[in-house]
Picture 1: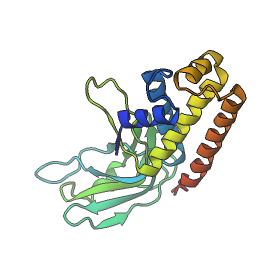
Picture 2 (picture 1 turned 120 degrees about the vertical axis):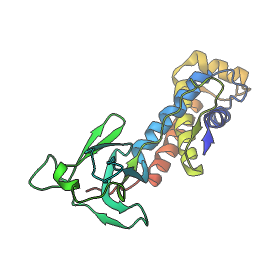
Picture 3 (picture 1 turned 180 degrees about the horizontal axis):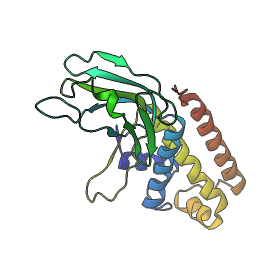
Picture 4 (picture 1 turned 135 degrees about the vertical axis):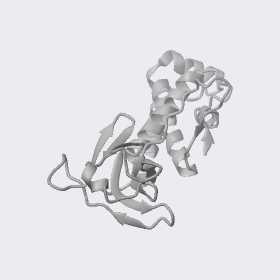
Length: 224
C-alpha cells in the first residue's frame, strides 16, 4: 500500500526534479494514474468477492436475482455455505440464457453483474448460503479531489516499481520532445551536460526498462 503523494514524490526523484520546478503536480499525478491504468491492463488483481443473497428474513426465500460485482473478469463462481465456507462450483455459463444454464454474467462500466433465473435459486436458503465469485478486479485510480485526504493506492513494491517506470518514461518522453522544457530541466536540475541526443537515449532506455518489467509481471489469466 502506498499513498499517491509517495508515488508522486518517487517519480519526481526519478526525473531528477526533486525541487518540483519543471513538472507540475498535476502532470506527475497524471503519469502515475496512467501507470496504474497500464498495470491494470497487464496485471489485474486476482481476487474473489462474496455476495450475500437478499432473502426473506423469516423464510430464507431469495427475493433478488441480480447482484452487482466489482470483478470485471470472472473465471469461477461457487455457492458457499456462510457457516463454514463450504463451497460448490456452479455450472460454467455461456453467452445468454441457454437451456438450463444457471446464471449469466454481464460486464458493466464499473465491474459486472451476475444474474440468476428464479428457478435456480429456489433450492437455496438465502440466509444460509451466498455466492463467491473469483476473478480479476482493477485497482482504483486515485484522484486528489479528496481535499486534505491523501488517497492510498493498493500496490505492492514490485507494482510500484512498474508504475514509476512507466511514469519516468512518460516524463523523459516529454523532455525529449519539448525543447523549452528540456532547457529548463537542464538549468534548474544542474544537468547542463545532458544533450538533447542523450535525453532521447534516456527516454529510450526508460521505455525499454518499463517494457521489460511489464512483460515480467504480466498475469496469465484464467477464463471460463
